[in-house]
Length: 284
Image 1 (cartoon, rainbow, N blue to C red):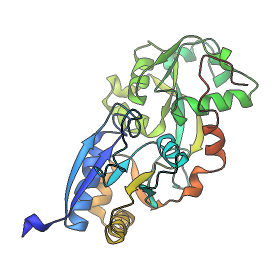
Image 2 (image 1 turned 90 degrees about the vertical axis):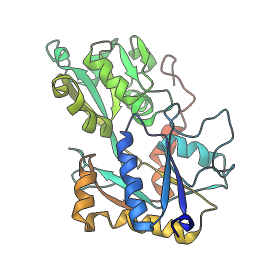
Image 3 (image 1 turned 180 degrees about the horizontal axis):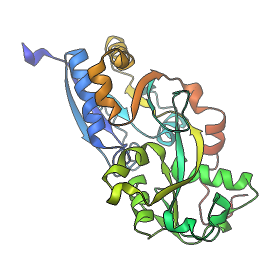
Image 4 (image 1 turned 90 degrees about the horizontal axis):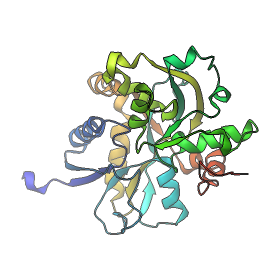
């Protein structure tokens, strides 16, 4: 009897920016709600489907995927008919998110020692060593370039550049003083500081940029409408069950809320338009 259960194949490209335990918890929720089996692939080499090989949707190897907004926008730009945006997204706690809306922020962080050197705003970081996750990250680099441009600056603002490979590594570089500042995904900072030396107390958030578009949940277009609706309902009903609500709260998730493609238009599209620009060249 158990062998007749549906198997849901899930991949996350969000680790180590987010802890893999968060996605294991989502799978536990879906198994209970859908009475199905789940498998989780952990892909930390890229924030979305690896660009040098066929995407797992067209080859029908994945049913559900968690990826960055920039990766989803790249798939959407290619008019990939094998994917759909699942109209639901997590809502994370953040001091700036007083209305508990979808989307996240980019925290500009420094070591507490920098405060003693009269570093009080982003512009005080001119010529300092900058750590970033990767060139395509909206929160790790693109929003920084956009903000500097709005302030009349250009890429000559940066001193040395250190590509860390992940938001978690960027934060660790600031904590260990390998880098003087970084722009990190706010949800990474929220969860990871408690595991850092002294609870990461030496990391100071200098400024917060955003709001950035919600984290997309992407589904295989071949998946049945019945399964898609069941996944959506399971996530949206999360706040109704205190036990599940408490489990997700450990990762900073308040609830799941409706999402749509509109969230990736407008300002995010403008930011995406400079995706080919580099941190170490002029971009205007």
